[in-house]
Structures are given as C-alpha cells and as structure tokens.
Amino acid sequence: MPSPKQQVIEYADGEIDVKITLRSATVRDGLRRLAYRQEADDLIKVEKAEEVTTSLESRLLLAETWLTLVVWPCCMACVAGIDNKPDSTRKILVPMSLEGFMNLPEALALAWENGAFELNPHWTPPSRNSEGELTEQGEESEPDDKSDSQTESSPGSDEKTMETTEPTTSNGTSTDPKSPGESGD
Figure 1 (cartoon, rainbow, N blue to C red):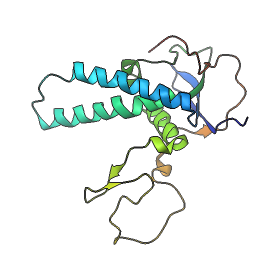
Figure 2: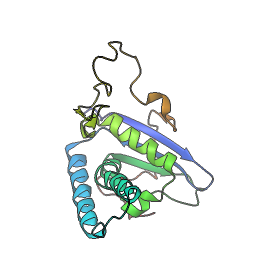
Figure 3: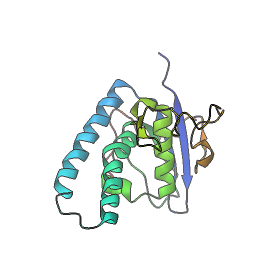
C-alpha cells in the first residue's frame, strides 16, 4: 500500500532541534483532528466565558479561537513522526496540550501550520476576500475584476520561514502515530 505524501519540517534554535514529519491525512488522522477540535471547543466554552472589554481584546480572542479550533487540531492530527536531536534541551512531543502549542516558537508553529494545510488542503477553512465574501481554498482573494493573470506559485509560498525536505529514515526516535507519546510542552 503506498504511503501518504509527507513533508519534513526542520527547526533549530539552540533550545529546540527537531524534525517533524507531517503527512497527508488518513481517516484515522481526520478522526484525531475531530477529537482535538472537540477538546478545543470544550476549552473555549470554559476559558472564554469572561467579558471582552476592548476591540483589541476582541481581536486577540478571535485569533486565539482560530488557533484553538483550527490550527492546533490540524497540526496535531497529521504528525507522522518527531525526531528530537539528542542535544535538544526542549523536546517536542505529540500529543501536545494547547498551552504547549501556544508556547512554541512562532516560526516553528507557522511552518507546522503551513505544512499541515499544504498536505491537507481539504482542512483549510474558507477565507474572506477584500469585499468580505467567502472564498474556497485556492480561489483568488481579490475581486475578479482586478486581474485575470495567474501566478505559478501558491499564495504565501514566498513567505515560508522554515525549509521542508522529503522524509528520511528515522533514527528510532519518531513517534508512532497510532500510539503517540505523552504530552509535553
């Protein structure tokens, strides 16, 4: 049976030195994503009950809700393996709590998010164009009358902060996706 498409994200900052292998989702991964999303929904109901008093607080709450309901579940669900280098002082483990994910370096989290949605575009929610209309994944985000030209690169492809490579043979430290290790931050 052919293996799903994979992508390896490498990240090192002196504290963390890790290779995270992501894959296109299987049915089991989709179920795992839904389980994370249900957990996220429960967290939002409990933690977001207090009143928002400013516009900035409202925007921050919206961004955190997006991360909680969309990004975190997708990133956790498509991990095929993790290879923490022996000299890492901070290990990345999956499953990872929402709080652990929110405390990751932003560059690592963004590369993880980008990889998850590149491999699983069906998980990408619709977005809004400049006129506020919902668009499907891959549609132009500008109104139709702006330009008829097409570009060869995908949106945001020039802005990647992390390099990705084809997966390599693990040195035995990757996580089995069917029975992941303990949570870690």
